[in-house]
Length: 216
Image (cartoon, rainbow, N blue to C red; front, top):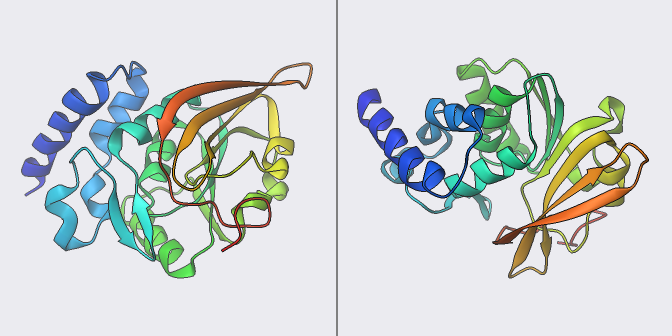
C-alpha cells in the first residue's frame, strides 16, 4: 500500500508542485517525503494527492498541496529556524515545516483537531513540533521572536501580535482579504524594523477566528 501512495506522491510533486514553479529543493523533498494520506480520514485517503483541498471535520480543510508548497517556499527556510504556525489543522503543513526548520510552534483553537494532529506527529516522530490550544491571532509570545510565521487561515489584516513577534529578517505568510477571496501576502521585517509586503496571488482559506481576526 505504501508503494501505491509513494507513486501518487511522486505524481503530485511532478504535476502540481514542480510544474507550477516551486523550485526550492528542500520543499520539493519534504513534499515527496511527508505521507499526506495519513493526515486524512481513511475514507478520503484515495484522494489525498489530488489537486484540491479536502475536509478534515469541524468545518476545516487540509490545503491544496500546491498552496502548502508555495507557503513553505516563501518562508525561505534553511533548517535552523524557529517557526510559528497559526492553525495546526490536519497537521500536514506543520509536518512539511518540521522537515524544513529546526523548531515548530503551532497553535490550534479546536482541541479535538489539535489532539488528532499531535497523534500523527508522534506516529511520524516529529519531536520538533510543540502544539498549543488557543487563539492563534495572539501568537505565542513566550517563544518569540520567530524567523517565520505561517497563517493557514484568512484574515482581514495581519494580526498585530504576529507582526510584533517576527524577528528581524523574519517573514509572515498570511492570506489577506474577505471571507470569500484573499491574496497570499508575505510581510518581511527588515533590519531597520520596517515591514515590506509582497503578494503571491489569489487563494481561498477558511476564516482566521480570534481577537485579531474574524469573530465566529
